[in-house]
Image (cartoon, rainbow, N blue to C red):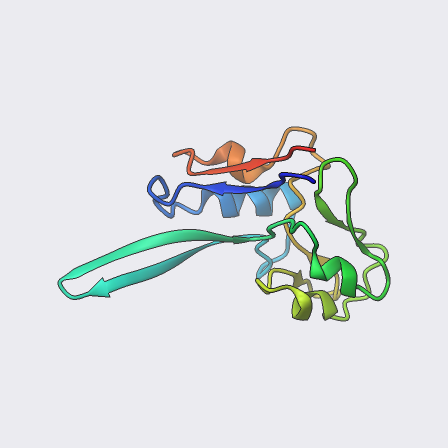
Amino acid sequence: MSDTGVRFDPGRCVKCRTCELACKEVHDLEPGIWPIVIQEVWKGAYPDICREFFPLVCRHCEDPACVQECPTGAIVKREGDGIVVVDQEVCVGCGVCRDACPYQVPQFDSRGVMHKCDFCVQRGEGPACAQHCPTDALSMSVHA
């Protein structure tokens, strides 16, 4: 059983969006594609209103529906660390993964290729979003 996931401290987040920009830069993504998005939720009733932030990002689920439903096998959960990755050469852009994902995380670029958080595995330095978070609100852990 892997313990791979996003750790988020909403009390530390100031919604500076550094995590979003770091991800886009590292992956050289076209406009409109955001593998991590900080959502804002307002709670309470006037005058006792507060706002909270939370990341909309791939959860690298224990039993990912996107992996099960992908008709081409382009999405796999890696053995050992549990990171869910996409082989963009195999992805046909059918959208089945987005429909299967309970968080609606997968996004498709203008070529129809799916993008989502992959913990920046190609970098070998850990996720850029967590590395550049100025308040340490965001971290990602990968454990086998």
